[in-house]
Amino acid sequence: MIKEVEAENLDNVPDVDFPHQDAAPGHVHLHPSPDMDNNPVLGKIRRVTVEEVKDEDGMSFPNNRRYFKPQLDAGWALHEGETSFERYRTYQEEEGEDPWLPFEDVEEWDLAQWLVKNLGQTWTNKFLKLPITQNRSKLSFHNNHSFLQHMDKLPHGPGWTCKKVTEDVELWIHNPVECMKELIGNPSFKEDMAYSPAKAYADCAGQDRIIDEMWTADWWGEKQKALPEGAIIAPIILSSDKTSLSQFQGDKSAWPVYMSIGNITKAKRRQASAQATVLIGYLPAGKLDCFTTDAHSLAGYRLFHHCMTILLQPLIGAGTNSVEMVCADSWVRRVYPILAACGRFPGTVFDIFLAFTPDLLHQLHKGVFKDHLVKWCIDIIGEDEMDARFKAIPNYPGVGNEIPPGIDHPYYNS
Image (cartoon, rainbow, N blue to C red; front, side, top):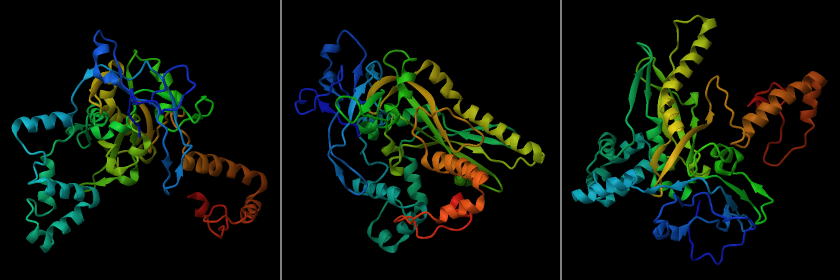
C-alpha cells in the first residue's frame, strides 16, 4: 500500500542518501503553472514510509523497508477532476436520492454487498428463498433474478458491442480504453495506485535494489523516456485461460479475455474481490470444421489474431496520442496505455522479460528444468540411470516420502 504523509510532519521519516527527494510512486506532481504556489495539494506529497510488513502467517519483519528514488518527470497531475463514482454521488445529492438506492435502506445495501462478496448465484437464490428470509426480512428482492435486476440499476462500466467476424462468428467486446478509465479512476484503488516509475531499495544508501512491482522495474523507466514530460504509462496486462471457456447455446463457446493495469499493486490485482481485473471481450472459439486437418491450426491462429486486432484497436490511438483520465485520487493525468503483458494465449510471443520476474512454474520448473535439462540428461546418461538418481534424492519435509518410478510418470510432468 502506498501511504500519504503530510509534508509538514516528516520528522520521523528516515534520511535517504539519494540526490533528490525520496517519494513513493503514488506521489502528486502538478504540471507547472503560475498559481502552483497557491495550490493546496502541494501541502501533501507522497513519500517513502517505513513500516512493519506482515507475511501470510502473521509474522512481522521490522526491517522490511522501502526507499524510493522516483522519476520526477512522470505522473504529473494536470488539474482536479471527478471520478465516475463522485459524479454519480453528486447526481444523487442533486436529485435528493438516498445513497443506498436502488435498495430500500442501508441495511439492505449491506446485505446485497455481503451476498455479492460471499455467495454465488445458486446459493444467493437458496438464501433468499428460505422461509425465515422471506417472512422476517421483507426484502425488496425475493430471489436471485430480482436481486440481479436491482444490481443492474447500479452504475456500470462500458457496454457490450458485438462485431460480426463472419456470418456465423461473433466477437463480443468492451472498449478497452473505457475499461482502463474504470480501473485507473476507481477510488478503491487510491492507496494502491502508482503513476510514475521509481527505483526501490532495501537500504538508504541505494545499494540493495528491490524489483517487486512493475513500476520498480527498469522497463517502465525506459519506456517513460520516450513519452512527453509528465505523462503516465498504463501498462496493459491481458490474460485468458482456455479452461475458463463459457458455454452458450448449442455448440457455441467463447474464450474470455481479461484486462488489468500495472499501476495497481500486484497484491490488489490478486484479490478477486477487489475486481482489479475486468472482462473486456469474448473471443470466438468455433470448431472451424470447414477447414482441413492441416489448415485447421493455422486458421485458428489467424482467427485469434484477427479478433485480438479488433478488440485492442482503440488502444492504438490512445497509446499514440494519450488520453486524459481522472485517476483514483481525483486528479486528471495524461495517460499512455502500453501493452505490457499477456498470458495464456495460443501461438503468441511477447517481449516482456524486463517487466516481470520469471514465472517459476512454467519458465523454470517446467521450461528450463523439465523440457530442457531433464531431456539433455536422459540423452547423456540414459533413462534408467536418471531414474536411479531421482530415487536417491533424500526426503524433504512437506514434499512427500516417495519418489514415483519412471521419468515419464505424471509426477514429473505436472
